Amino acid sequence: MRTPMIDEHNLVLFSGSEGDAYKRSQAAELSLNAAILRAEIARSYEEFLDIFETFYADDVEVSREDLQEMIRGKSRVRPFLLNVLVPLHVMAEVARLSISVQQTAVPEDTANETHSAWRMDFTGVGGRRCTLKWYATRRWNASRVVYEHHYDLQQIGGPLTMDDLNLGSGGSDVSI
Image (cartoon, rainbow, N blue to C red; front, side, top):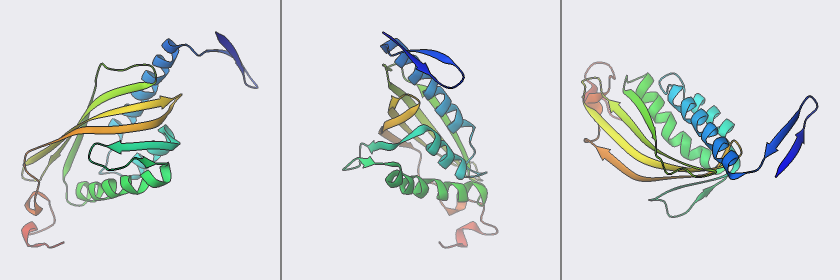
């Protein structure tokens, strides 16, 4: 069934079919992931907050397999984001920790639901590396994420230490 959608300049035909929903969610997923991959945490954590504001619905629901309850709403998700983004930004900008992010689509997508695999590599100034891997499922309503779930988190390599950060002379003598 086709429903006309009218704005002040154009007449656009909109189809509510499942095939169109699949295409819309795929296009939105590609745009969101491209924005995440282009953003650089060493430059600014605010870029990631702008991405969150642009792509996520006000009533978004976020979960992770190790959380007891769902986090609902942008205002409740934002502090969780800041607790991750701000320390990463400081370690990348000030302590010269190298952070790279990769994403791969997982072919389980359906209309309005997308799946992806993520990998984040942390490399210290001496070359020591720690990798985090996880999967994400997103549900979409038009071009906004309304649900995101992270699962199967894996850490490869040990945690980085103060010696892996460039904190001036004698990084291991610095206490936090």
